[in-house]
Length: 559
Image 1 (spheres, rainbow, N blue to C red):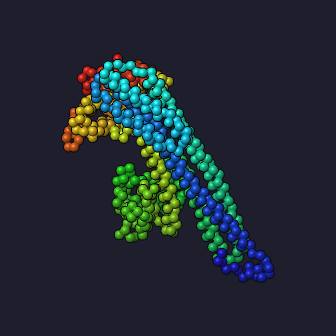
Image 2: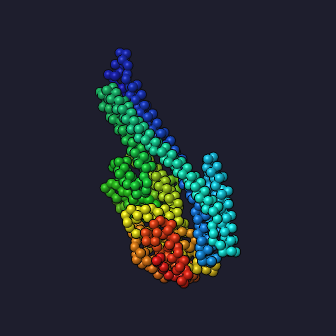
Image 3: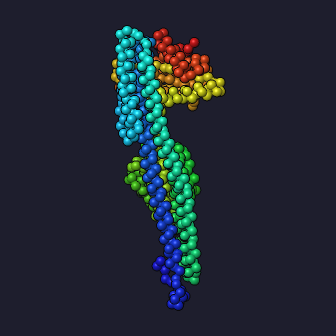
């Protein structure tokens, strides 16, 4: 240990007495081994967590591609129904894109399930049925154009049911895999809850035993006692930090939102930095400013709540930046007026910046930086994973062009709301909307102009909806709005407000006004117009087609 033994101890050794210093050394080495083992276990669990996140993302992609198959068939059928009712070629604009959506779903699903023999067999079973269903759709379109017959072949119904059944079976299999992976993750967390306290207790016991032996051996030498106490303090601090690190990692991995993660950091960061003030800032989605989400300590380290990325030298340089006390030439613009020494650390995950960590140094700068690196790595990875999770969820339920919910989410929500409405005897308004003469925008100005129209209407609907409302794009230029708790009069009033607001929009594309833009809206209400979601939507569709027939740019409430 590099400590000169006192003369009395040497006299004891000269009489043949064994020195018990070997035992403290063994205890300390044992404590270090336990701590290194804990670090190795933590690192292994982190790698397994990243692998599990990748598998979960793969499962979500498979489910999304599987749902494109029945969804595309439903959109194609909807286009044929619209054409059968209106005899308007514009109603078929979504027919071929929907067929392509089905085919693309088949191709993507085939590529994604190659590693699962059972799913490959199921996909091989559903593929010929889907090809045949597409052929029947095209044949029905030909029949509608030639003879006008609207009869649907029994084979088509059976194929649709078979396709939905197999797709649902494949989706249930993927959900089972997802549940199994979630169970495995929970088992790892339970294992760490057992291993971590046991390892920490063992480390503390070894350290405590080592110090007792050291204290008994060198009790007559003050300098040796002080050295041992300092060493013990460092080890205890290491054990405490390891426990905090494990606790923070466990809690952050269980968080479901960024707000939960920032609350965890707000509670644990002051325990890492007991004498230092600090703050954690998160980069916004547009990546044009950072906002302070967590702050601790008595002295603020930031001059304001927000600042741009260029205001921090750590972000400019892509590595930690330390400001010495009183050195104003290299201070970040966001620094407070205290002029104290400060460390700025970029929070990185997978090579991407997600935020910054700022700590006012008050003591050992090396120790502060070491703690900051540990906290920064944990927080950066957690924020990145949570953002990825939120992004995947939004992609699965949102329409990318309009920012509205997609058809699948709306169908599920309407079914759930109707079940609740039946239990609680409440009404639900359903608005089905269609952009008038939408084909004109595509033909006159190009498809990007049509996209601009849909995007503008989507933005308006998001502003017009309340917390419980669900605005969605059902496909093509068809939109919908579900109004929980709305009566017939309320739904009609809301529909008229939306129609007027759309009619007053100024939509420009390539420097030109491409308006006017108008909506035809059909309104139906549960339970007045049906006891199921399909019934209410069917009545609202009929009201929409009536609005089209009577001149467009109007609201028709079902009788």
